[in-house]
Length: 242
Image (tube, rainbow, N blue to C red; front, side, top):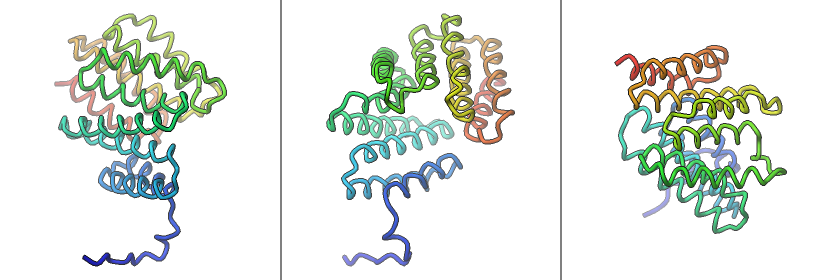
């Protein structure tokens, strides 16, 4: 079978990084099919470039796109598929060597493990990822706000929405990191609040869940760029109102 040549004169100039950014943009705009296609193109080009780190990160990006599809459709098959991509990202970085590189893929894997109901394994993944980044003071990923958000995840799954004082202490760490861009802090903070609200709702604590959702809404309303978080909030409120 003959391969059809591309008609795009710029195609040959595009790199893994270009396709990766296209995937990230498409995902944030809710164009999930475009995001998945761009992720595959990024993975192919990173492979050609022998860029192992970015090769793994593109798998993680594909996993996140699938998690977004799961959030909108409720089809658990997407979450299982996302777990495969997250596991691949972790395995690739682990095989490449270097302790720090596995932290973020491991954290992402933990989120999916939690969503699939495997709380015990998620706790292990979270604690190991936190330990790695907390010790990697010079690594760009070792950001106080990010680590604080990781702690909120750990707190929520370990104590099943209890220990609110501990959650609030770690949540404050997100807001207090002035070196973190405001948008990033807003993403991390709203994610933590919505996550807590969802867990409380599952426990039947609807009013408590609403309080955390309201706190998330205050931040979302203050930042028009939080389009994906707004979708998360709307889905959460639909559940609370049901």
